[in-house]
Length: 168
Image 1 (cartoon, one colour):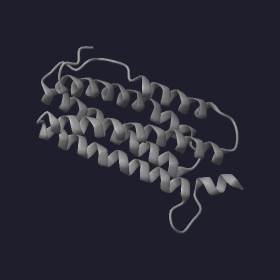
Image 2: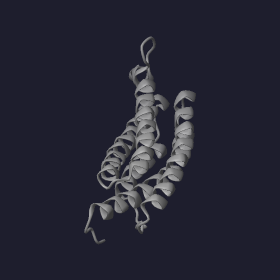
Image 3: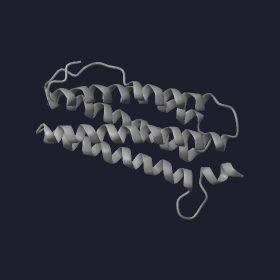
Image 4: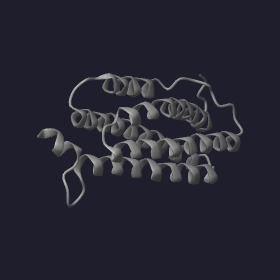
């Protein structure tokens, strides 16, 4: 890796995000299958479709940068998915497992929010307004996914969520 400018850093971040999204596209169906509540299954399925859109956006970003994008493995996502896989394979109470799946998924969302936020800032600093706009859209979707997971875990305003049910 040769980082001589912010453009190089941006290209490196885009390569990392491409790997992260590709790994997540493989992991989300397994998480959806492991979830016991229909609401959590649907959240994972919905986010899978969004994640495919994120991958398409990143391909567009790569075209707009017009720099070589490194092909790499996002080791952070690899570790987060490995932790999620342990939960998928775990035995136990289905609602406790759902709570653990939510926790693992939120760690993924927080990682993505940080990574896209960095890439968005770099795009702006490098004068790529179109890329910044694409990153903003993805950031909004990642934040919404995180909020959805929180709502499922806590139940929102009028009912108990997965976490409360798992305690009983």
